[in-house]
Amino acid sequence: MTAADPEAAYYQAVEEYFVSRRGDPLFLSNADWHLIRKWRQAGIPLRVVLRGIRDALDGHAHSWSRERKVGSLAYCEQEVEAARERWGRSLALGSEPGLDAAGALRGFARHLERAQGLGPRGREAAVAIAEELRGKAVEAGLAEVEPWLAEREARLLRALRADAGPAALASLEARVDEALAPYRDRMPARVLEQIRRDSLARRLLEAHGIPRLSLFE
Image (cartoon, rainbow, N blue to C red; front, side, top):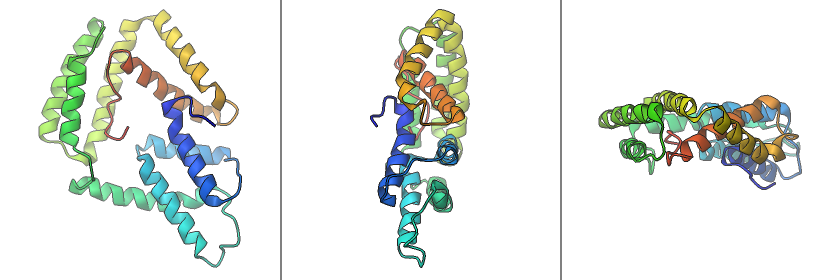
């Protein structure tokens, strides 16, 4: 299945990796999709989830029960959690490879300062949040930055929606629904709705040249 939307790509990558490592064709259950949604909402990077799945299936391959196929993604949940904890310790120590939180925050601030086509509420929010981002960059500790960024992004999105108006938002929603149509029969409604919200947020920000405010996108 071709990824029609970047937000759906996280879910698709987990599905494809699990199925390929398992070795036999398998359709994910609703519970499996909800588990991926849980990981996504927790902000666990895709590479960390795949590492946990790999560790779980490698362990199964060397266990006494290796002749029995793993039937559910839930089998990997414990190892994904272990991978998440190792990743969290790396964040706390500031040793996550290739991740410069302070530099990323300053980059977000530059995007906000250069944003195009903002209405009055969007401009006011962008200027204020850019200033906050530059202040946070001085004291940035990775462990607490992500929820802090999520709060600022939500504030910015509220301002952008207020400026956009009903007609523009309806047009944006129609484009997102069209892009997500291939997933409608594959995923539970709650999972698809989460992807839809994320996609709307990304597209609304991108319309002004602003990326998602997350270190792990």
